[in-house]
Amino acid sequence: MEDCIFCKIIKKEIPSKIVYEDEEVIAFNDINPATPIHILVVPKKHIETLLEVTQEDNTLISHIYQTINKIAKENGFAENGFRIIANCGKDSGQEVMHIHFHILAGKKLGDKIVD
Figure 1 (cartoon, helix red, strand yellow):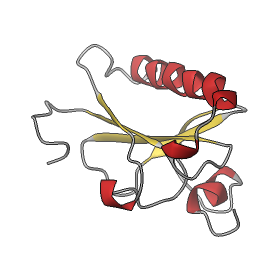
Figure 2: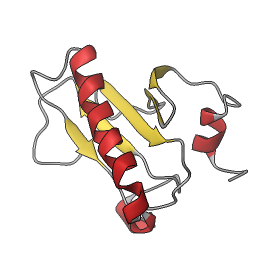
Figure 3: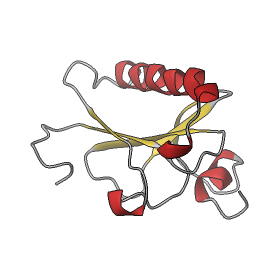
Figure 4: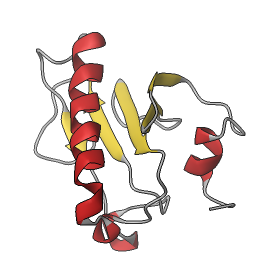
């Protein structure tokens, strides 16, 4: 997708503070963090919403969650816990139409999704 900001970050056309990267995913700090630690995990394959995930993507989705675990452990917030948010569609708050997973950590999170 030519106008997708995440695709541009993946192609290194837009700078970002990359936390993790491999052949299938990239993870970087959110530019408007909702918590002290706010990392976005994005598959390099462009998939607009979670509704477009297919059975062919099962390995990719599993890899994303394994990557989230690795990031949490390597960055020292696994023990205290973290929240994962994946929005689907405009009414959910999905602003970039490329699936992504928010890792929120670094403080005690209440019942509200974000403070």
